[in-house]
Amino acid sequence: MVEKQMKTRRTARAQPGPGESPARPLVALRRLDDREKRDAVMAAISAFPLGQDPQWQKLAKRLQPTSIDEIDAVPEGIFASGSETDKTFAAAATVYVRWDDEIDGRHTSSVEGLPAEVKGHFTDARDGAPVAVVDAMSVDAASVLE
Image (cartoon, rainbow, N blue to C red; front, side, top):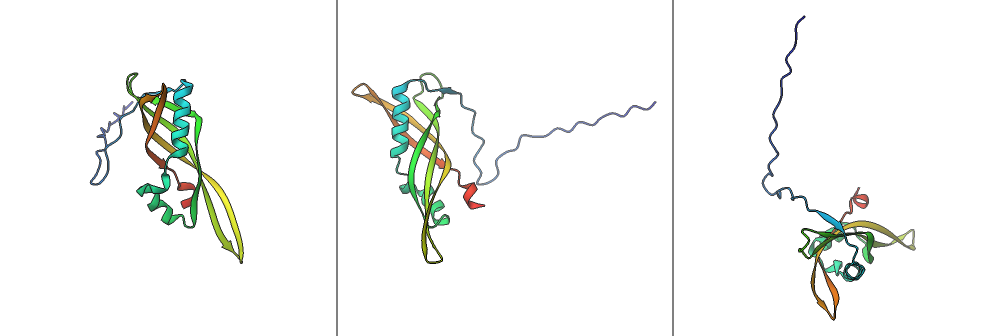
């Protein structure tokens, strides 16, 4: 009987190429149970001026004719991120985009929800209430760009 020896292949960890960003480190997420902080995050997400964001403006050019109807945080998707002393958060949100168009001489309008990833931080509390600040919002428009 002849035994075959299996060759093993070693693979290197992929390094980012030119223009690519390195892989992001994993961040520990903890459910944000503090109701005041969760409410502050929800208010900050709803008030975020996404239409003024340069990345959104680039995307909006490809999604013509659209406008942002509303932005809502997903309450179950709000997490404290980083260490216990770190004042950062990560959240899931839905960006509702309104499509206005004219088809066969009739004005049509529809709204579609697009998922978004939000990152932010808390600043010192004002009058005892926490203040949430949205640092970045990334909208996944793959479903409408196909």
